[in-house]
Amino acid sequence: MSKNRLKNSLRSGPDQLGYYGEGESARGGFASGETLMPVLKNLSEAFENAIKDQGFLDKFHYYCKHWIGRPSPLYYAENLTKKIGGAKILFKSEHLNHTGSHKITNCLFQTLLALRMNKTKLLVESGAGAHYSAAAACASKFRLPLTGVMGQIDVDRVNTNIIKARHYGSKLEVVDGSLKEAITFVLKKWTSSPDSYYLCGSAVASSPFPRIVQYAQSIIGKEIREQCLDQEKKLPNEIIACLGGGSNSIGAFHEFLDEPSVKLCGVEGSTSAALTKGTIGIMQGMKSYMLQSKDGSIALKTSDIAAGINYFSVGPQHSYLKDIKRVEYTSATDDEILETYKLVARTEGICSALEPMAAVCETVKRAKGKSKDYVIVTNLCGRGEKDLDTIEKHYGEEFE
Image (cartoon, rainbow, N blue to C red; front, side):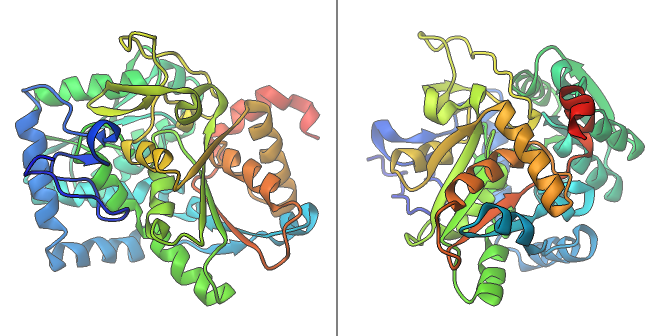
């Protein structure tokens, strides 16, 4: 082992080279070209200094409470629980945050970090548009110009978030493809813009981004712990979350990685199931599981109906957690996601985003046959206005 490598524990973050795990099984890394390497190292140093600064953390938590509206509720889905029969189902209601998803917490943290680093512009990528609209809200609040980048495929189906971001004053550049192409474009744009801060939206790409996003979003799991102990007088038996890159899921899981009594399950889209169908490769600055050609030179196309989980790869910490079997990963089809959306809308009065319906679909399967004191927490990471057109096109009058 290199002298610069530190042995990982499940919650301590990557080692000094950005890897989760050791040797051939290591996932992550500073896998970027010479142009970006100094920028990434500078960002890593700035981040580590910021999280040791109590004044910075106090400011972050102040805006989490008074602007975002944290903590988000841990809600007993009573009607769904009774309809399914079995385990008690609790929703971590991230859809009730300002701007409508978990994305705003990471955007707030990184915007404050950008200001601390004296950056004057923000760059973001987005799939479902939730990250773009959340980042745009932060950019407006803290008076920084922002440019968002999205793939045309996603722009065509999540117009609501794009409109919101425009109202906040942000600009959008559109590229061919979807989230994969948007990330690649932003990384190239960032190399020629030293006064810009790339506000990465998921726990992907080169180190230190997976660590930064995990740190910001781990507030989800910390709240789940406190709320579940308060409401249920015990820790949950399982936590289930959807994932594309994996920001909401690593945020929900991280607090419990060293709690073997708490089962953890991540649910991908069926066409983008990198963790169950992919192989290890290196693209977009990280070594991780991905859907790729046999020679590893081309990323395969994906087509999941939920734009936010329609991504060819996954964050490196998830890859590591799969390999050590700490987290179980499954997938849900478009039809399952849509049917679960209808179920939640009709039982709980919640029009959810399609992405977390992958997680609720798995929750329903696992809840059946369990005892009433078995508690499953499912992360409801976004609300569904952005998906209404997609859902209407699928169901039409059949939704009645």
